[in-house]
Length: 215
Ligand code: NYM
Ligand code: MG
Image (cartoon, rainbow, N blue to C red; front, side, top):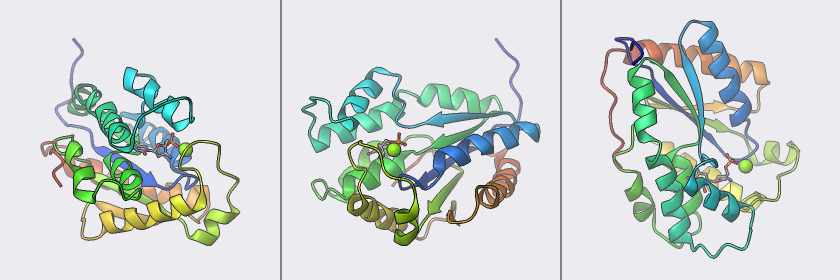
């Protein structure tokens, strides 16, 4: 067994619509934290490498896949649950996790379909590790239009993404661990903000217990 640090790492989540720059920023953030001597690791949801991840990948790629809205919602959630032990052991060993999408993507992308109500969408997320910090990368509808095109996956269209943006905003209101970042700035500008705020959070939570998410 490896030696564990007596300080825990932070759980940092980056959310935002498709094309808001999450993946770029998550990678740069992990590199910057490591360079500042804080062990850090990138995680991505959906994790397409697991059993549930393969079903999710088929669904998103519109392969012949008969999953209804409830079933795919629960699979996205299960895809997080199957990673809980790994997440907790890394965090408790002092590694800061930077996660590209988490429960809020799960809730927002499902709730905008108007098939299941918001409360139903939140329930399967209850009890997952609670993020210490959630960055919401925001871009205006105009800015969204200037970014290179969406791919061919399900949900990758303007009207759906705009509804998701509004849903993120309502999930974000009155949450003190959320920070909205205007993602229209340059990659470096946005990056610098994420690093500064993350370093503060890492120091703040290092001797506090990791909490569980409850909606
Ligand atoms: N997505 C992602 C969901 O609908 N529910 C979830 O729980 C998660 C984590 O999957 N359009 C959607 C949002 C994205 C799509 O994600 C694939 P990515 O980050 O584009 O690979
Ligand atoms: Mg995508």
